[in-house]
Length: 371
Image (cartoon, rainbow, N blue to C red; front, side):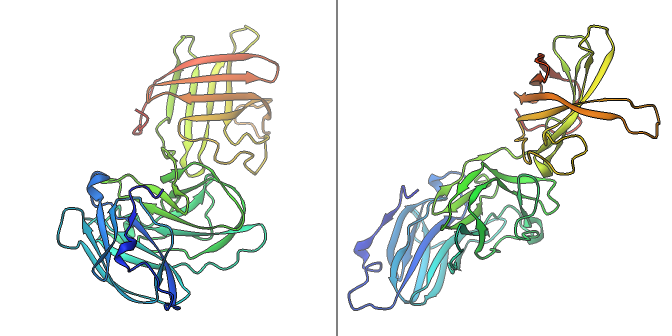
Protein backbone atom coordinates (compact mmCIF):
# COMPACT_ATOMS: atom_id res chain seq x y z
CA UNK A 1 0.00 0.00 0.00
CA UNK A 2 2.92 2.28 -0.42
CA UNK A 3 2.51 2.76 -4.18
CA UNK A 4 2.89 6.30 -5.46
CA UNK A 5 4.76 7.34 -2.31
CA UNK A 6 8.15 8.94 -2.73
CA UNK A 7 9.85 9.73 0.56
CA UNK A 8 12.37 12.44 -0.20
CA UNK A 9 15.19 11.53 2.08
CA UNK A 10 17.41 14.00 0.27
CA UNK A 11 15.52 16.84 1.92
CA UNK A 12 17.36 15.98 5.09
CA UNK A 13 14.23 16.43 7.18
CA UNK A 14 13.69 12.72 7.62
CA UNK A 15 17.31 11.79 8.23
CA UNK A 16 18.36 11.91 11.83
CA UNK A 17 22.00 12.66 12.40
CA UNK A 18 24.03 10.64 14.83
CA UNK A 19 23.78 13.59 17.20
CA UNK A 20 19.98 13.63 17.24
CA UNK A 21 19.16 11.50 20.24
CA UNK A 22 15.59 12.79 20.72
CA UNK A 23 13.46 11.15 18.05
CA UNK A 24 9.80 10.60 17.25
CA UNK A 25 8.11 8.38 14.67
CA UNK A 26 5.39 9.60 12.32
CA UNK A 27 3.20 7.89 9.74
CA UNK A 28 1.31 10.09 7.27
CA UNK A 29 -2.15 9.26 5.85
CA UNK A 30 -4.07 10.88 2.98
CA UNK A 31 -7.74 10.63 4.01
CA UNK A 32 -9.00 13.85 2.38
CA UNK A 33 -11.53 13.06 -0.41
CA UNK A 34 -11.45 16.53 -1.97
CA UNK A 35 -11.29 15.37 -5.61
CA UNK A 36 -13.55 13.26 -7.82
CA UNK A 37 -10.63 11.16 -9.07
CA UNK A 38 -7.71 9.53 -7.30
CA UNK A 39 -5.32 11.36 -9.62
CA UNK A 40 -6.96 14.66 -8.78
CA UNK A 41 -6.31 14.10 -5.07
CA UNK A 42 -2.52 14.05 -5.59
CA UNK A 43 -0.57 16.31 -3.22
CA UNK A 44 2.92 17.18 -2.04
CA UNK A 45 3.53 17.17 1.70
CA UNK A 46 6.22 19.50 3.05
CA UNK A 47 7.80 19.90 6.49
CA UNK A 48 9.51 23.17 7.35
CA UNK A 49 9.44 24.04 3.67
CA UNK A 50 11.08 20.87 2.38
CA UNK A 51 9.22 18.24 0.37
CA UNK A 52 8.56 15.02 2.29
CA UNK A 53 6.11 13.24 -0.02
CA UNK A 54 5.14 13.77 -3.63
CA UNK A 55 2.32 12.28 -5.74
CA UNK A 56 0.60 11.32 -2.47
CA UNK A 57 -3.03 10.41 -3.24
CA UNK A 58 -6.21 9.64 -1.34
CA UNK A 59 -5.89 6.31 0.47
CA UNK A 60 -2.08 6.35 0.53
CA UNK A 61 -0.12 6.09 3.76
CA UNK A 62 3.51 5.76 4.79
CA UNK A 63 5.39 3.49 7.09
CA UNK A 64 6.64 5.12 10.28
CA UNK A 65 9.22 7.78 9.47
CA UNK A 66 11.82 8.71 12.10
CA UNK A 67 12.15 12.43 12.82
CA UNK A 68 14.07 14.51 15.33
CA UNK A 69 11.72 15.60 18.09
CA UNK A 70 10.68 19.25 17.85
CA UNK A 71 8.35 21.67 16.11
CA UNK A 72 7.34 21.32 12.47
CA UNK A 73 5.38 23.48 10.05
CA UNK A 74 3.52 21.10 7.75
CA UNK A 75 1.82 21.92 4.47
CA UNK A 76 -0.23 19.94 1.97
CA UNK A 77 -0.05 21.34 -1.56
CA UNK A 78 -2.24 19.97 -4.42
CA UNK A 79 -0.05 18.72 -7.24
CA UNK A 80 0.45 21.52 -9.78
CA UNK A 81 -0.57 24.25 -7.35
CA UNK A 82 1.69 26.76 -5.65
CA UNK A 83 -0.36 27.50 -2.53
CA UNK A 84 -0.99 25.01 0.27
CA UNK A 85 -4.50 23.64 0.78
CA UNK A 86 -3.66 22.74 4.38
CA UNK A 87 -1.14 24.24 6.78
CA UNK A 88 -0.53 23.26 10.41
CA UNK A 89 2.16 23.35 13.08
CA UNK A 90 2.85 20.28 15.20
CA UNK A 91 5.16 19.46 18.09
CA UNK A 92 6.66 15.98 18.20
CA UNK A 93 7.87 14.61 21.52
CA UNK A 94 10.79 12.26 21.90
CA UNK A 95 9.89 8.56 22.04
CA UNK A 96 6.29 9.09 20.87
CA UNK A 97 4.66 7.57 17.77
CA UNK A 98 2.19 9.70 15.80
CA UNK A 99 -0.23 9.41 12.90
CA UNK A 100 -0.76 12.59 10.87
CA UNK A 101 -3.87 12.50 8.69
CA UNK A 102 -4.98 14.88 5.95
CA UNK A 103 -8.77 15.00 6.35
CA UNK A 104 -11.85 16.80 5.07
CA UNK A 105 -13.33 17.26 1.63
CA UNK A 106 -13.41 21.07 1.52
CA UNK A 107 -17.22 21.07 1.13
CA UNK A 108 -18.90 19.20 3.98
CA UNK A 109 -15.89 19.51 6.27
CA UNK A 110 -12.85 21.77 6.10
CA UNK A 111 -9.50 20.45 4.94
CA UNK A 112 -7.22 19.95 7.94
CA UNK A 113 -4.38 17.95 9.45
CA UNK A 114 -5.31 15.65 12.34
CA UNK A 115 -2.52 14.52 14.68
CA UNK A 116 -3.12 11.27 16.59
CA UNK A 117 -0.91 9.82 19.30
CA UNK A 118 -0.28 6.10 18.77
CA UNK A 119 -0.17 5.06 22.43
CA UNK A 120 -1.20 1.41 22.31
CA UNK A 121 -0.35 -0.60 25.41
CA UNK A 122 0.52 -4.29 25.50
CA UNK A 123 -2.79 -6.01 24.61
CA UNK A 124 -1.97 -9.16 26.55
CA UNK A 125 -1.60 -12.77 25.47
CA UNK A 126 -3.92 -13.81 22.65
CA UNK A 127 -5.14 -10.25 22.05
CA UNK A 128 -4.54 -7.37 19.69
CA UNK A 129 -5.11 -3.63 19.88
CA UNK A 130 -7.63 -1.93 17.61
CA UNK A 131 -8.46 1.76 17.24
CA UNK A 132 -11.47 3.13 15.32
CA UNK A 133 -11.09 6.53 13.64
CA UNK A 134 -13.93 8.45 11.96
CA UNK A 135 -12.42 10.42 9.08
CA UNK A 136 -15.33 10.21 6.62
CA UNK A 137 -16.75 13.72 5.96
CA UNK A 138 -20.05 12.57 4.44
CA UNK A 139 -22.23 15.32 6.00
CA UNK A 140 -21.86 18.99 6.92
CA UNK A 141 -23.61 18.76 10.29
CA UNK A 142 -21.53 16.80 12.79
CA UNK A 143 -24.68 15.22 14.24
CA UNK A 144 -25.44 13.79 10.79
CA UNK A 145 -22.00 12.14 10.66
CA UNK A 146 -22.57 10.10 13.82
CA UNK A 147 -22.16 6.35 13.37
CA UNK A 148 -22.06 3.15 15.40
CA UNK A 149 -19.52 0.35 15.06
CA UNK A 150 -21.18 -3.06 15.10
CA UNK A 151 -20.67 -6.72 14.39
CA UNK A 152 -22.43 -8.20 11.37
CA UNK A 153 -25.09 -9.41 13.79
CA UNK A 154 -25.77 -5.84 14.89
CA UNK A 155 -24.06 -5.90 18.30
CA UNK A 156 -22.32 -2.65 19.31
CA UNK A 157 -18.52 -2.89 19.63
CA UNK A 158 -16.92 -1.40 22.74
CA UNK A 159 -19.79 1.05 23.28
CA UNK A 160 -19.06 2.86 20.00
CA UNK A 161 -22.39 4.57 19.31
CA UNK A 162 -22.84 8.22 18.40
CA UNK A 163 -19.30 8.56 17.04
CA UNK A 164 -19.06 11.75 14.94
CA UNK A 165 -16.53 12.86 12.36
CA UNK A 166 -13.04 13.59 13.77
CA UNK A 167 -13.46 11.38 16.82
CA UNK A 168 -11.35 8.30 17.52
CA UNK A 169 -11.79 5.53 20.06
CA UNK A 170 -8.24 5.16 21.25
CA UNK A 171 -6.72 1.68 21.25
CA UNK A 172 -8.57 -1.11 23.05
CA UNK A 173 -7.73 -4.80 23.27
CA UNK A 174 -9.81 -7.55 21.66
CA UNK A 175 -9.17 -11.30 21.36
CA UNK A 176 -7.48 -12.43 18.16
CA UNK A 177 -9.90 -14.03 15.72
CA UNK A 178 -12.06 -13.55 12.65
CA UNK A 179 -14.05 -10.31 12.71
CA UNK A 180 -16.97 -9.20 10.54
CA UNK A 181 -17.57 -5.58 11.52
CA UNK A 182 -19.51 -2.74 9.93
CA UNK A 183 -20.17 0.97 10.24
CA UNK A 184 -23.86 1.72 10.68
CA UNK A 185 -26.25 4.47 11.69
CA UNK A 186 -26.64 5.07 15.41
CA UNK A 187 -29.75 2.87 15.58
CA UNK A 188 -28.07 0.14 13.54
CA UNK A 189 -30.86 0.08 10.96
CA UNK A 190 -28.81 1.53 8.10
CA UNK A 191 -25.47 0.02 7.13
CA UNK A 192 -22.96 2.52 5.77
CA UNK A 193 -19.70 0.57 5.31
CA UNK A 194 -19.55 -3.22 5.34
CA UNK A 195 -16.01 -4.63 4.96
CA UNK A 196 -15.51 -8.33 4.38
CA UNK A 197 -14.61 -10.46 7.39
CA UNK A 198 -10.89 -10.50 8.20
CA UNK A 199 -8.60 -12.52 10.45
CA UNK A 200 -6.92 -10.37 13.09
CA UNK A 201 -3.89 -12.08 14.65
CA UNK A 202 -2.63 -11.52 18.17
CA UNK A 203 -0.05 -8.86 18.94
CA UNK A 204 -1.02 -6.31 16.28
CA UNK A 205 -1.82 -2.62 16.74
CA UNK A 206 -4.44 -1.88 14.07
CA UNK A 207 -6.02 1.48 13.29
CA UNK A 208 -9.31 1.18 11.38
CA UNK A 209 -10.21 4.44 9.61
CA UNK A 210 -13.57 5.25 8.02
CA UNK A 211 -12.74 7.26 4.90
CA UNK A 212 -14.50 8.78 1.89
CA UNK A 213 -17.42 11.19 1.59
CA UNK A 214 -19.75 9.10 -0.57
CA UNK A 215 -19.59 11.72 -3.37
CA UNK A 216 -16.02 12.38 -4.48
CA UNK A 217 -14.75 9.09 -3.07
CA UNK A 218 -16.79 6.09 -1.90
CA UNK A 219 -17.09 5.31 1.77
CA UNK A 220 -14.57 2.68 2.82
CA UNK A 221 -12.20 1.40 5.46
CA UNK A 222 -8.46 2.01 5.57
CA UNK A 223 -6.71 -0.30 8.05
CA UNK A 224 -3.19 0.55 9.16
CA UNK A 225 -0.76 -1.06 8.51
CA UNK A 226 -2.70 -3.33 6.11
CA UNK A 227 -4.33 -1.00 3.57
CA UNK A 228 -7.84 -0.48 2.23
CA UNK A 229 -10.21 -3.32 3.09
CA UNK A 230 -12.44 -4.90 0.50
CA UNK A 231 -16.08 -4.02 1.13
CA UNK A 232 -19.42 -5.38 0.00
CA UNK A 233 -22.62 -3.50 -0.72
CA UNK A 234 -24.21 -2.90 2.68
CA UNK A 235 -27.30 -4.95 3.49
CA UNK A 236 -30.47 -2.91 2.97
CA UNK A 237 -34.11 -3.61 2.10
CA UNK A 238 -33.49 -4.08 -1.63
CA UNK A 239 -34.94 -7.62 -1.77
CA UNK A 240 -37.94 -6.90 0.44
CA UNK A 241 -41.32 -7.98 -0.95
CA UNK A 242 -43.03 -10.79 -2.86
CA UNK A 243 -41.16 -12.85 -5.46
CA UNK A 244 -42.89 -15.46 -7.63
CA UNK A 245 -41.63 -18.55 -9.41
CA UNK A 246 -40.97 -17.94 -13.08
CA UNK A 247 -42.22 -21.49 -13.73
CA UNK A 248 -45.79 -20.62 -12.78
CA UNK A 249 -47.84 -22.70 -10.36
CA UNK A 250 -48.45 -19.84 -7.93
CA UNK A 251 -45.33 -20.52 -5.89
CA UNK A 252 -42.92 -18.04 -4.46
CA UNK A 253 -41.29 -16.31 -1.51
CA UNK A 254 -41.90 -13.31 0.70
CA UNK A 255 -38.60 -11.75 1.80
CA UNK A 256 -37.93 -9.43 4.73
CA UNK A 257 -34.31 -8.41 5.32
CA UNK A 258 -33.22 -7.24 8.77
CA UNK A 259 -30.33 -4.91 7.84
CA UNK A 260 -29.33 -4.26 11.45
CA UNK A 261 -28.49 -7.95 11.84
CA UNK A 262 -27.40 -8.80 8.25
CA UNK A 263 -30.27 -11.27 8.42
CA UNK A 264 -32.93 -12.52 6.01
CA UNK A 265 -36.28 -13.95 7.13
CA UNK A 266 -39.50 -14.75 5.30
CA UNK A 267 -42.01 -17.25 4.03
CA UNK A 268 -42.27 -19.67 1.12
CA UNK A 269 -45.68 -20.52 -0.35
CA UNK A 270 -45.89 -23.69 -2.42
CA UNK A 271 -47.67 -27.08 -2.51
CA UNK A 272 -47.38 -30.24 -0.45
CA UNK A 273 -44.73 -32.63 -1.75
CA UNK A 274 -47.17 -35.56 -1.76
CA UNK A 275 -48.87 -34.25 -4.90
CA UNK A 276 -52.21 -33.69 -3.19
CA UNK A 277 -52.40 -30.06 -4.27
CA UNK A 278 -52.63 -28.91 -0.66
CA UNK A 279 -51.21 -25.40 -0.17
CA UNK A 280 -48.08 -25.37 1.98
CA UNK A 281 -46.51 -22.43 3.83
CA UNK A 282 -42.95 -22.62 5.16
CA UNK A 283 -40.79 -20.08 6.95
CA UNK A 284 -37.05 -19.49 6.71
CA UNK A 285 -34.41 -17.60 8.68
CA UNK A 286 -30.73 -17.09 7.88
CA UNK A 287 -29.98 -17.39 11.61
CA UNK A 288 -30.67 -21.13 11.12
CA UNK A 289 -31.35 -21.64 14.83
CA UNK A 290 -33.51 -24.45 16.19
CA UNK A 291 -37.20 -23.69 16.66
CA UNK A 292 -37.65 -21.78 19.91
CA UNK A 293 -33.97 -20.91 20.32
CA UNK A 294 -33.25 -17.39 21.56
CA UNK A 295 -29.72 -17.07 20.15
CA UNK A 296 -28.91 -16.65 16.46
CA UNK A 297 -26.92 -19.69 15.32
CA UNK A 298 -25.30 -17.96 12.32
CA UNK A 299 -25.31 -14.18 12.91
CA UNK A 300 -24.66 -11.93 9.95
CA UNK A 301 -25.36 -14.66 7.39
CA UNK A 302 -26.98 -12.40 4.77
CA UNK A 303 -24.67 -10.14 2.73
CA UNK A 304 -27.40 -8.40 0.75
CA UNK A 305 -27.25 -10.70 -2.28
CA UNK A 306 -26.74 -14.24 -0.95
CA UNK A 307 -27.89 -16.25 2.06
CA UNK A 308 -28.37 -19.80 3.29
CA UNK A 309 -31.33 -20.15 5.64
CA UNK A 310 -32.99 -22.90 7.66
CA UNK A 311 -36.47 -23.93 6.47
CA UNK A 312 -39.18 -24.51 9.09
CA UNK A 313 -42.50 -26.36 8.87
CA UNK A 314 -45.29 -26.14 11.44
CA UNK A 315 -48.24 -28.37 12.32
CA UNK A 316 -50.93 -28.66 14.95
CA UNK A 317 -51.99 -25.04 14.99
CA UNK A 318 -55.59 -23.79 14.99
CA UNK A 319 -57.10 -20.51 13.88
CA UNK A 320 -56.90 -18.04 16.79
CA UNK A 321 -55.91 -21.02 18.93
CA UNK A 322 -54.35 -20.76 22.36
CA UNK A 323 -51.88 -23.62 21.83
CA UNK A 324 -48.82 -22.92 19.69
CA UNK A 325 -48.12 -24.94 16.58
CA UNK A 326 -45.25 -27.44 16.63
CA UNK A 327 -42.30 -26.49 14.44
CA UNK A 328 -39.36 -28.41 13.00
CA UNK A 329 -36.34 -27.61 10.85
CA UNK A 330 -36.81 -29.57 7.64
CA UNK A 331 -33.88 -28.42 5.51
CA UNK A 332 -32.03 -25.47 4.04
CA UNK A 333 -32.71 -22.93 1.31
CA UNK A 334 -30.04 -20.93 -0.49
CA UNK A 335 -30.80 -17.62 -2.19
CA UNK A 336 -28.93 -15.64 -4.81
CA UNK A 337 -30.33 -12.27 -5.85
CA UNK A 338 -29.03 -11.52 -9.34
CA UNK A 339 -30.49 -8.02 -9.61
CA UNK A 340 -33.56 -6.10 -8.50
CA UNK A 341 -35.93 -8.35 -10.43
CA UNK A 342 -34.40 -11.84 -10.66
CA UNK A 343 -33.24 -14.36 -8.09
CA UNK A 344 -32.61 -18.08 -7.61
CA UNK A 345 -33.80 -20.19 -4.69
CA UNK A 346 -32.68 -23.78 -4.09
CA UNK A 347 -34.31 -25.82 -1.32
CA UNK A 348 -32.53 -28.92 0.01
CA UNK A 349 -34.78 -30.87 2.40
CA UNK A 350 -33.57 -33.34 4.99
CA UNK A 351 -35.38 -36.18 3.19
CA UNK A 352 -33.23 -35.64 0.09
CA UNK A 353 -35.72 -33.57 -1.88
CA UNK A 354 -34.16 -30.77 -3.92
CA UNK A 355 -36.21 -28.03 -5.58
CA UNK A 356 -34.96 -25.01 -7.54
CA UNK A 357 -36.90 -21.88 -8.44
CA UNK A 358 -36.08 -19.01 -10.78
CA UNK A 359 -37.76 -16.08 -9.10
CA UNK A 360 -39.19 -12.86 -10.49
CA UNK A 361 -40.12 -9.88 -8.37
CA UNK A 362 -43.84 -9.22 -7.87
CA UNK A 363 -43.73 -6.19 -5.58
CA UNK A 364 -41.16 -3.50 -4.81
CA UNK A 365 -42.25 -1.04 -2.16
CA UNK A 366 -38.74 0.01 -1.10
CA UNK A 367 -35.80 1.26 -3.21
CA UNK A 368 -33.51 -1.40 -4.68
CA UNK A 369 -29.76 -0.93 -5.07
CA UNK A 370 -28.87 -4.30 -6.67
CA UNK A 371 -28.81 -3.16 -10.32
